[in-house]
Image (spheres, helix red, strand yellow):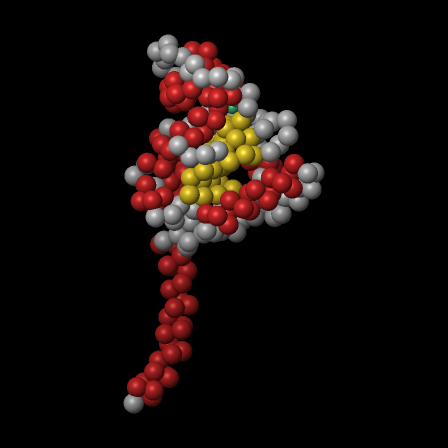
Length: 218
Ligand SMILES: [Zn+2]
């Protein structure tokens, strides 16, 4: 009896799933690439870039739905273009850039959109050597300032103040580490970071070699 009922129903159920599938995709983000897979895709691309084997797959115009492998929060510096240095094509990276690669409300909402609606499960905070924004913060610290950019970088300058080595270089790494940690504590991300569903990684770009180095988390 059960068999007789199930058989005629099966095609109807299948058609119903097909009919509602597009709606379901719009309502909730389909899970994107696992964070470790996405990170490997970026590191492989960076290896191609630094060895002069860049392929930039998919670097043609596209109006297809976007499912970026990663969010990149990078400095606006013209020498740090994420799509090129990770050798990724159109639709592969959701890039948020500002001087000093920190975030305010607007940048945060942009990142939240990619994570909540595009299924992106990896965020890379990318600092770089010779960063003018970080140098400005090192020069100004600890003078009071109205600059959001300087205020956001000050914690990294404060934490590395007086340490051995180049103060700007030290603050560049610390700024990426602290910014990644700040992001990880944002209410929109904290629970997913805790269960490993979302990964937020600090990294540093070398202007001269083109190499991206992952930094230790805070
Ligand atoms: Zn910079």
